[in-house]
Image (tube, rainbow, N blue to C red; front, side):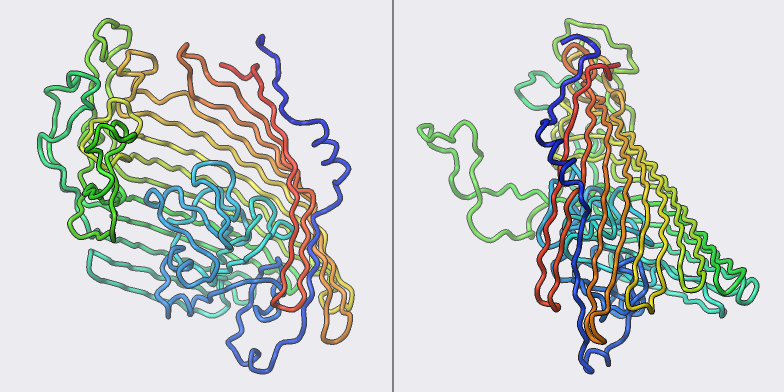
Amino acid sequence: MTMGERWVIRKVGLVSSAVVMSIVNAALLLTFPISAQAQALEEIIVTARKTEESLQDVPISISAFSSQQMQDRGIRDNYDVARFTPNFSTIQRVGRDTDRPIIRGMVNPGSRGEPNASYFIDGTFVARTISTATTQSMERVEVLRGPQSAIFGRATFSGAVNYVTRRPTNDYEGQLNVRAGSSEDKQLAAWFSGPFVEDKLLFLVSGAYEHYGHQWNNNLQPDTAFVNGFLGADIFDGQSTEGDTSPLGQTETLDFLAKLTYAPSDATDFNFKWSYTDTDDSQYLTNIFDTLNCQLPNDPSEAWFETSRGAYCGEYKIDGTENRKNLPDLRNGLVVPQGGITGTVDDLPLSQRTSDPVEPGLRRETNRYLGEYFQDIYGWTSELQASYSTDFFDSAYDLDHQEVRAVWGLFAFNNVFDTTDYSFEYSIASPVDNSIRGKLGVYVYRQELIDMQRSVTGPLAAFDTSPGTDFQDPRTQNIDNQSVFGSAAFDLTEQWTLNLEARYAVDDKDMHSGQRNQMNESAPGYRCVELFELHAAHHAGVSADRRLDGLFYGCERDQAWRV
């Protein structure tokens, strides 16, 4: 295949189906009156369907927590929200890094593809994990179970989690929270709100500092780091093999929020928001369990004698386990000698044979900006929302959790993710007190991702191949999403309402890999188009829930994208 040719793996029949079936995402919802006992419960106003309504009136499966409920329950972050929410879970996979929401058991690999459920802040899509966000500036959290494509759009096949920040108030009010506990657990958080000009210009500021020390320390002993025996001599012989007892699982978060509301009239509102989060975490905690007691490879006639270390039979107990992570090699850096492992080639300069020091752990900095415009004209509501965010993510981990020196670099990485995204949404809705009412809107989203990775020290440096210990060419990914959405509600009687929600959206992805082959050539790029064509849900009461989603997509491999 020559340069410039394209590999098309999208089937013609699939594309034809996408065109023929380009009806709409449809959701059919039925609501019915609630009991007097339910009405006596605390009322929580939610925006799960992009409109304000009581939690008790929403005809979908949803859990919501107000700020007071989160404070009463000690909910500090997204992990705590999951612990209190049925059919929603999330765990720390690699520290506060690759975790994703799992709703109704639907999840895909943490580092591959799009999530089945996504996070939102004030209705705007969060491109990566939300694990570093705090709840101090939140007015409430809404967990929506089941497909939410008609309302929230992309990557919400199994549900959506929407964090809603506090609103500026027309009265001076605020709160100060202080916490201290064992394991260096401490928090200092405060928010304050009030008017610059009463009824016209309102503000809110919020800030939080949270620190959790650790429960475990690394236990790497001096002079125990080693190179895998099949590589022969230790090519790092003479370089530092110091011990390490640094804390593991330590987290630190600094969070700021500023909001401004300008209301020139009773029918017009302008809202502006800026939030900033800075995170600094240590190497995450993963204890080694290396005491095996059954299926041990002690019989050469057994099939697994050469390939298995055995297994453990019984109940796992954390007592007696320890961490022996080779963090000094990350922290101090390593130098591959001239010629690499073979000693016969000497092409790489010293800079590409030197693994620069990097502090193990996670460093993350995010900025989010949001502007909103609301206009009411004789009951008709026009809403415009524009957002912009940047997310810089720098992590370095020892992933094999042992004393092994990372000649191959397969388990000691330094990753950098730089994400920028923009969104624009405009909608217009009819008066909410009409017996027949509706809403129509458009949505545009773009995400730009740059992903860079280097190994410590890695096979390229070990075998004297460029770019050695330097970062490889970045992997780039651009996502463009455009959609049209709408809803209609019909009051069948005083007690029954029929709701119809729909969205048609197109996802367009351009991807280029920075990986290189044995000839030092970059990998080809890909372009994928996903069409969210059919989304239907029918609710009869609160117990029945039937949904149907169709997803059609195609990809093209483009040789012309080589560099």
